[in-house]
Amino acid sequence: MLNVFMKDLRAGAVFLWVVVPLYVLAGLQVLGHGRGIFWGNVVCGAVLVVGTCLLDWKNGADLFVHSLPVTRTMVVRGRYLTAIAAGLLSLLVGAALGATGGLILLSRGGAWPRWMAGDTGLAFILAFAFVVAIYLPCHFRWGFGRGNVAAALLLAAAMLATDLAGPLVLRRLEGPAGRPPDPGLPLGQVPEGVAWMAARYGLVPSALVVLAAAAVMLWLSSEAAVRGYRRREF
Image (cartoon, rainbow, N blue to C red; front, side, top):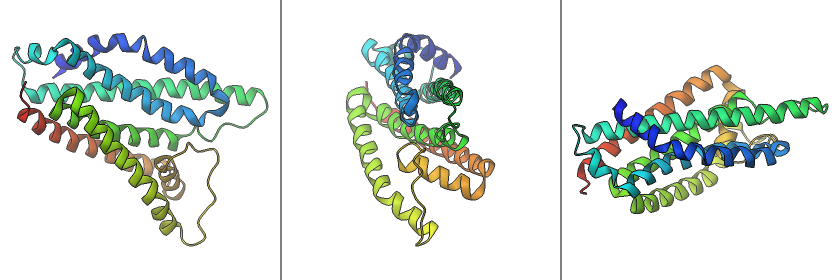
């Protein structure tokens, strides 16, 4: 599994020199409006994962890898390690950009930005884990082309359901009075939901809940990916 992971890192290194600099350049343009960095983080990490899958598909690496003494389970687990590494890298780059924007605001007499907080980082972990949990089983079951279409449809449906159900759930939890939207938070129900949980229960308990939820999602997703990959024919 670790050898497959290292293979992914070496093969995907080309994307690090393309995607990450582009993301940094784009992030530098929106430092004054850093709420966009959150979803930029998610997209950057997702592109790195998809890019690794693209390289395997384009170069026919599946047939070569499975001519070696590795199991399909090992290939799947290795790809999940790659996805976790991509998420951590994206989070670190986004945190560096956000800290730079925060320091610029402080130097101009402003306040530390609301979007550069612990609950926003937790929201990124949850959102990115969900994207990976949807994408990789589709990829391993149907391949790069059809898998991308299936994942895109599922993610679009999940976003629509979250946008519809999220406000109703928060309104029920907060009572009829509700609360005004926080203009400093990134847009989306995931950042708002995690921020609500952190404000009500504290950052540490919220972190434990988010990390546990992300771990469970990725574990269940990897089990589904292994099952789908075993049924796939090359």
